[in-house]
Image (cartoon, rainbow, N blue to C red; front, side, top):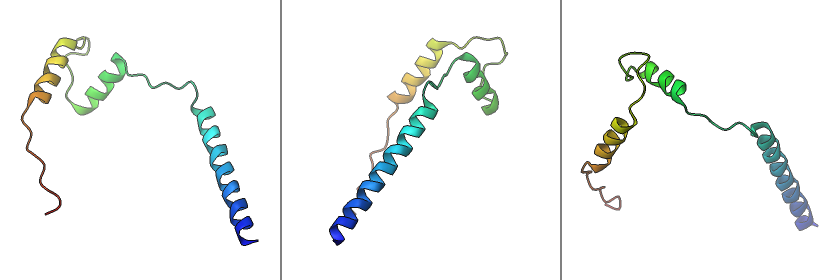
Length: 83
């Protein structure tokens, strides 16, 4: 008897989770995040790290080189967490 109650409760919880998941998926359907030039300009403007002038296009080669320099840096080895 008790195992039947737990089984039914588990089924209800699983069905509830599936229902919530389907509602969230329907609500977010078709909303692909877009990161384009205007969005990047807005982010850079808020961080004060953007191009000097508003009309300057982003230099993808300069961005790529800066990213390569960042990943080529030497990093400290992590400490042994086991002590």
